[in-house]
Image 1 (cartoon, helix red, strand yellow):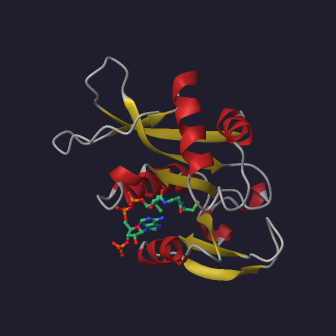
Image 2 (cartoon, rainbow, N blue to C red):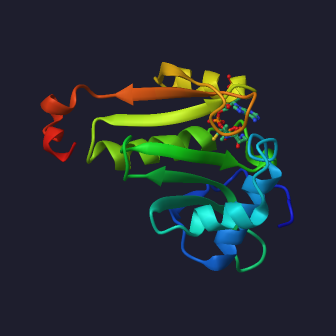
Length: 175
Ligand SMILES: CC(C)(COP(=O)(O)OP(=O)(O)OC[C@H]1O[C@@H](n2cnc3c(N)ncnc32)[C@H](O)[C@@H]1OP(=O)(O)O)[C@@H](O)C(=O)NCCC(=O)NCCS
């Protein structure tokens, strides 16, 4: 995908991933960005992740001169498994960063997750301190360090933002 300058007049629209072109754009963004590049994530693996029906993917689309809107960022949420309410990945195109889009994607994912469960989980790679700082600024607290979790030699910091115990949220029966 080309990287034309972004219009700063119209804010991107955030909505569920809809087309295969959007899926490939997300995959390209993922495979070409750290932390995934450093973790060895390929384009095909990235595409499989955003196309996995078990994952909920939202895209931020910006207007473009052509008829096709362009993907400025995306977020992947998992609502199944042990840690229900896991933000697996969030990415914003390099030329669109620093304008609040990453925070907006995370806020939207939180709204979706907190409708069903009181916890939002997210990980930051040990070599990605800027992401961890962003999450902490958004109210996430460190749970613990998952050593050698994705690749040997690097750890993942697991963080959580919570509304309170499961029992007070009325969702304890789910677990
Ligand atoms: C993390 C990320 C989604 C934030 O998107 P964004 O639109 O720039 O986010 P916001 O504008 O809401 O917030 C900006 C903050 O993100 C921080 N940030 C985190 N990772 C960053 C990165 N790789 N590059 C630039 N800024 C980053 C900046 O330090 C900034 O904090 P500051 O205001 O204290 O300087 C984006 O930087 C990105 O895609 N990074 C690469 C992928 C990644 O690291 N994803 C997180 C792990 S899954």
